[in-house]
Length: 401
Image (cartoon, rainbow, N blue to C red):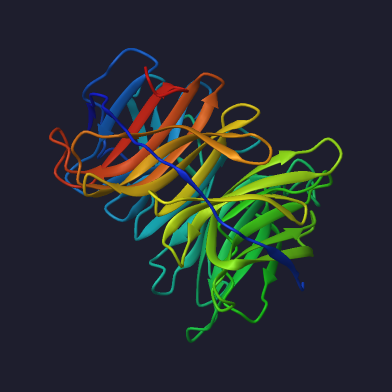
C-alpha cells in the first residue's frame, strides 16, 4: 500500500573540521502485496509504501518516465516500478532471504540487478537478475557460489570495456571457507547477466575495498574503494585496467572507511576524486579529495557519524548523504556542498522528518537537471503501516518544493 506523506524539513547546522591525512602507494516473482491506493497528480511528491511486514527502499533510478526502486519486503529482495506521480505499478520479488544492492538499465531497456541470496552471516551467494522493465517479469535470475559466502555490491557501466559484450562491471566481496579473511572481486557481465571474466583481489589481508566503483582513466580504467581491516583498518583505493588487472593501490594513514566516491575528469591530468565515509577512530564523517597521488583536502563533519552517498549537483556542487543523531534519532541527512578546488563549503543540510523514530537505507540522486530522487526505510510515522515503511521523495534540486 502507499500513502501520501506531508513534507517536513529539519534544517541542520553543520560545520567542517580539518583533518590531516596522507596516503601511500600499495603493492600491488512478481509480487502485488504492495499496492497503490492513493494516486496523487503532480511530478513532485513524497509517499510511504508498505504492508504488514517490514519494507524499505534503498536505491532508485528514473527510466522512460517511470521510477524503478530496489528495496526489501520481509527480508526478500524487491524491485518496484512507480509512475512519474508515484502510483504503484508492480513489485517483483525474489522468494527467500535476499537483497538487491544495485541496479542499472541495460542496453535492451530492462533492469539488471546485483545483490545477495541468503544471509551474509551464513552461506550467502552472489545474485544477478534481469527483470522486464515493462511487465516486471523475471527474465533471468541466478545465484552463484564461488566461495564460502559472498555478495555483489555495485554495478558500473564501463564506456570502454575490455570485452564489448561485457560492459557492466560489478564489485563483490567473498569470504574464504572456515571463516577466513574477506577478499574483493571484480567481474564483467553482459546485459543478460552472463559473466565474461572475474578477478579476485587477494592481498592476504582482510580486504573490503568493494564499496564503490568509478572511472579512473580514459581507457576503461576503474577505481574501487573501501578499507583494509587487518592493516590498521586504513582507507584504501585500488585502480584496475579495463581487463581487471591491478594498476596501482593507495592506502591512507588513518583508520577510516571510504563508502562512496565522486569522480571528475581533468582536462590534462586524468581524474580527481572526492571520497567520503567514516573516520573509525573519531566516529565522525570524513570527506577527502585526491588528485593523482596528492591529497587536496580532508575534512571531518563532526555532527555526522558517516557518509554513505555522494552525487553531483552541477560542476562544483554536490550532495552528501550521511547519518547523524538529531532529536535523539540517527537519521539520514542531505548536505549540499561546494568544492572550491582546494576546500569545501557547506551550503545547507536538510533531512525529511515527520516524527519517525528509525531510519535506514538513505539514498539520493539527481535524475534530471532540476529533479531530485530520495529513498529510505523508516518507522514510527503516524500514517505508516505499523512496521518499517518504504519512503520516496521526488523534489526540486533545492528540496524546497
